[in-house]
Image (cartoon, rainbow, N blue to C red; front, side):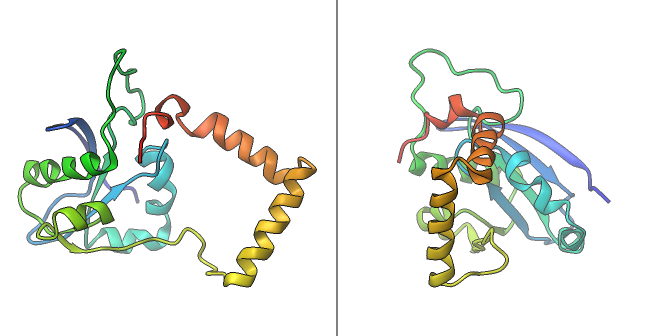
Length: 178
């Protein structure tokens, strides 16, 4: 079961944000606000996760608000020559406009937003992409193994190339500054 999606373009002090709402606000349902990783968009970063069978039960109790950074959504046009991409703090400062656009709801979201606007954030969930939760020894062994595979241009190297060339929006990746 995939819930309905509504797309919105929201004007903020630092530019336009593309927002996709999954589900509909009912009563005081909290909203999960997602913000993708650098060079990705909400589809590449979160679709698989939110389409898992286990997540269907969770999404019955939350409205999911996916925010795409400026120009990161699928089909976005390129920025004009000389465009100054927002800093990480400015990207976080754009999010209250999203909350105001949809009215007041409690959100669970982005660390930077919580630090700058603590009144807006009810909770913060940091998702570990590795469900096995390796320890430090496992982490070090994995790093060494991957390095050795890369030196021989093995599977992980090819996977990385495919990922970098096909999935990440490279022309947008260079716009992010820290």
